Length: 230
Image (cartoon, rainbow, N blue to C red; front, top):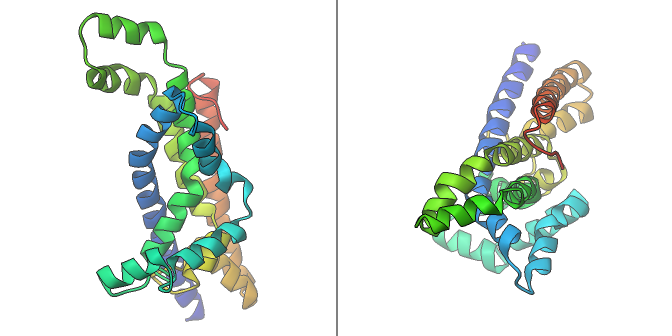
């Protein structure tokens, strides 16, 4: 009976993890394409500051980032208070809080491969497109994006995988609420704390298997010369 209960918990946590990773990846894709293009082309003086802000989650300990997001999302502060006013619920200890935190935490994993892919686009092709009368928008959609598709794919894979494996940020923002914030990494921690080692091993195997598939996919893409990993 207990085994069935734990299996149900693992299934719910897996679905929630995939939901969170998918939503994070989709939102980041919308954000990262224009941001990556701007970072690859701009000579603005604030560009180094923006690049540092985008890259910061790679350097900061997850608990530090999670702490400041927890403060920002709390009802006593501007963003958290505005969310409560608009939706009559808190960002802290909610799926949407996890989503916003995951977007911030995984941003560099999406932006950097996309920016690097844009940098590798042959400028002669863009000049030829403009010479033939194509607008900047048409050039971007018909030439730049297709030539950068492998970098975009890499960014999506890395952001998805990073979201699946995150722990510190989601623990501080979301806590451990079943079907709401208990993703696989949190469930693994909870099972270890309660000494359910067999169930913990099952969760760990799921995460290890997923990580292996991701790394294998990236390795195969690299062998074909289709991307450069971070």
